[in-house]
Image (cartoon, protein in one colour):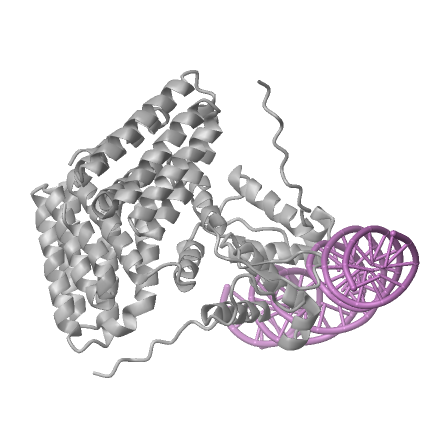
Length: 252
Length: 252
DNA sequence: GCCGCCAACTGGTCCGACCAGTGGACTAGG
DNA sequence: CCTAGTCCACTGGTCGGACCAGTTGGCGGC
């Protein structure tokens, strides 16, 4: 039976889109690498044989996607940027903002991702990396005496290290993105909580437990502790009705 | 100790960015909802008191972010779109294209996400949802006799159902996005594999095992089977050196 | 040799114009 | 009265030219 040809719905392709595609393809083929410069807008006008408005619309799209950055007056032209999470984060943030995403979903996601990363890390970690983990604990302890932002940063370093040990940068990226969105939603409440310092100390304690479990190679326990930790840390901000779903993630 | 004020690096804000922000804020406040229309470009020119070029650059950014869609000649103006994964997928795809992301990382991510979703689903599923899962298995079996695309679609329906049962749309979105990227990378190879049909049958068998484990409420086993299934399905396309990392995800 | 000025760019914004296409109103026909 | 066809006001897409503020690198004065 010959397959009937699947016709694609034809939609007019705008000129600026073609420019965007050409640039992205050049990037995909490696002809453009981060740090390189694009020709100036007026030069692109002649190369693409379109008007400057069209070139600029294409550049705006590339810019909003985090591909390039234009600076006024820069004689070198727009710069090709290395990949950044910012665009990805923006998309997830919008997902959360449209309320298609609840806080409990975000936290549940982090419980899963972080737990899995810790489980893998406890298997793959080298002795040196274990030392690094211990060092981040010390840094977290010191940061508590500064302020919440400092602690938050130290906590981020811990999770980044975990993700790096687990050798999966996608986990790392997703964790950071979701973490950023969650903090954007409730960091104010946490920072101004009356027992802010106590919360940080408790969080530190949990992190130390996780490192202990990683040291003994008990990935299962480490993951469980990590999930429990995250639940305790955020549960107060999650409606009771949704807490049950999160609790389902801890038991195993 | 008074906190020293943290000055933000001041950077010029472009006019079109202000427009984008205003629209996104209106969206966040619920003043704009999907399906509604924006005023026409020329009307926006007067409302924002900028030139049409500026308005258009803002619209291009919004359009590339999947927020609105402009159609030539439409007297109703640009349309506010419901959220779509396409923009999110584009970002992840770019992440993969820049080769910051290897196939094994993508697959490892899916093993984690899908395993976790199945584990939660086995705890939260209702009898009706179990019936639905059985139904998707039947659909998958039927799709095998059509072609790989049909099977792929049925498989997608299965994972969508799992994610829905697990009550976390972020898992669902991430799964679909990453799944789409992975398929974009190797679907050709799979579809044209000589033993394509055998692969599909084996995959179906694994899915049935997962459903069995879900029926008995053994979430742990279900997750393990699911991860093993995904590993078997994709391992052939992953370099040997990276397979070890993936295997670490299966054992527990 | 160093330092400060200047001119040739850059990108950001504005204006006015033309085109092909859309869709609603309006009209001719039933 | 309702339907079907026409038409036109208006849409977005693209173009070209213009001005401005800012950056940069080289040139000239010290």
